[in-house]
Every structure is written in C-alpha cells, then in structure tokens.
Length: 153
Picture 1 (cartoon, one colour):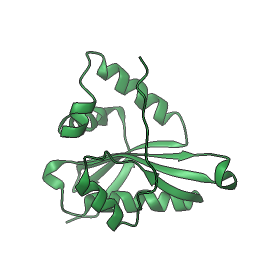
Picture 2 (cartoon, one colour):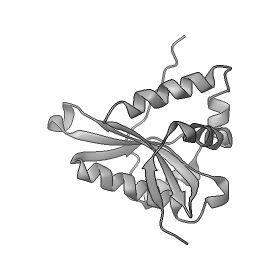
Picture 3 (cartoon, helix red, strand yellow):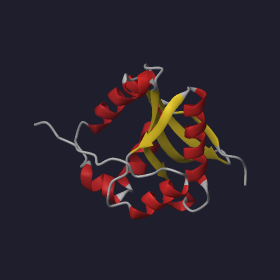
Picture 4 (spheres, one colour):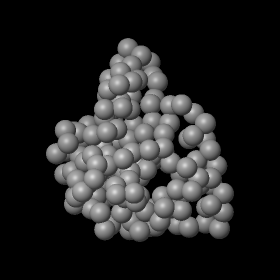
C-alpha cells in the first residue's frame, strides 16, 4: 500500500466531495439536495480557495481519491490572541474505511495546525456519530463543549 497523499482540492474534485456527503446517512438527512447545490458548492469552493486561512483537501492513495476534509485557521482574541485550527467534514469513501486513512488525514491536519502555531485544534462531530467520537478520542481529542446551531429563515 502506498503512502497517503494530501493535496488541495480542485474544481474537478467537487463531484467526489459531493458523493462522499451523499453517501453519508447523517449528512444526507441534514443537507437535502437542492436544485442549485452545484452552484452553492462552487461558490463555497471559490470562497475557501481564495482565503489562505482555509483549505479544502483531498486524500489520495495509489493514484485514486479516498477521502476529503476541510482545514481552517481561525484568529481570535481569546486565549491571548492565539489561533485555532478547525477540522471539518472528515470523510473517507466507504470502500477505504478501517484502513487508517482517516487517522492519517487527521494527524496530517494536526501537524499543519502545529506548524501554524495554533494553540488548539478543534472539530465538531454530530452527536449521532458514536463511532466517530471514539475515533477522535483515540486520537487525543476530548469532548469539551456543547454546540448550538441556528438555521436562519
């Protein structure tokens, strides 16, 4: 098995990223398809790639795409002005799960945060994802906050 390669996503990767989300029951239930979702995804991609504090990433192994995630660097004034690393939307294609790919992706993201002198690396995980919670805890993450969300009309 070859090493995992992590690279910045291109517009050509959007369909793969969308398919990862569509194949996930929690995501599919939470984010129903809209007729303009392709436009929204492209706009989101452009916003991410135009900001040096955000990266949309693809994981490849043996020349094929196996996963995706987003990594953001967030400035703040709390913690004495320290930066935070935010890992989002970690997804591995079903046929490649349980091969250590997710762990490699997250450890890579943590290393990027350390290189940017982030004081904390954070992520959120839907409360339904008990296996994901065990995975993140095994990697050293601790549940620390209760999250709240509001969907504006």
